[in-house]
Image (cartoon, rainbow, N blue to C red; front, side):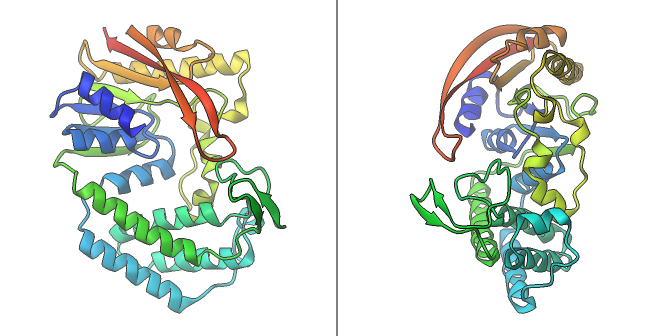
Length: 332
């Protein structure tokens, strides 16, 4: 996706303009827009996605941040694994006692950090929590039930056992997160970045976007709040799953697709009302149900081009080929 966003920026935008992503996800559009020289606005109903995007695009004082995060690891080591009796039922179901004790201890450390360092530490905790669940190594995206016994691992081609501790992940993701932020800092430009935790159907944008680059949720495929539940459970993030559009729990029935169309029309109509006539809107989505021509038309957007993109997903049990549609429209 980063390379794809880069292509769209080169083709449809100029440095100094403003790019809006109403489904910002993990912030790829904002990162690429910034390095291209554009201001960026991202919106998402997921508090976890907003946290990720905000941390990715912040202009960090990296020396102080790295010092604070390494101090957090040292405090975690000194504190030691804590009791898990007060953890939620969901956490106790999805983690071994050792792994959960590590995660809760690190969460206690976060509470003593300065607010800026704490934001990054929350991302580190969430990344560690994702890897430390009682699930198979090859099914981290959508595990259906906890796995407590040894299993044949399709990723490693051998017998593996569920994770029993999380400390190694906290160390790994501390180093990796600092490295990623440092890499971005070498490319980061002095352009405004805004991440809005809100509903894109109604949000008021702080800047007038020059255009949109976005990959909306596919209808009936993913429940994003449930996918990242480990973060919501550990961090106490605001849960706005009722505002998700096209959640998997609603399926892909005719009524669900109709509700999806209405929601997407509202998103793009709200965005179009805050953009100039002739602004470019790029949408990357698997439109197998062919609902997007009606969505764009209902939002007052004029479809100018539609391309099919071949994708070969190479990791996890969901690996395989599929196709995405790239729709290019303009505001009228």
